[in-house]
Amino acid sequence: MNLVKGSPCDFLVVGYDCRFTYEKICAGLDAILRGAKFIVCNRESNFPIEDGHVLP
Image (cartoon, rainbow, N blue to C red):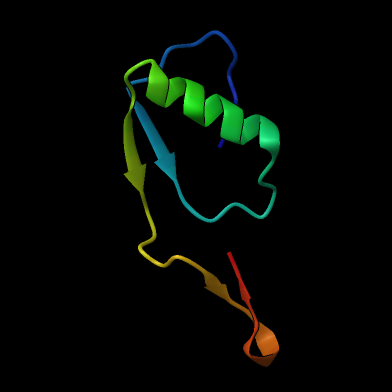
């Protein structure tokens, strides 16, 4: 996600982001609370990695 402060948005599109931050989650929540439609690109609730482990 590219953060552009002060810019309204109509849609929040979320997918895998290896540089996910608390700042991004706050910006996303703010967009949703201001009426942005929320679109999720992945249905999986976790991300499988090596050795049978998963990431949330």
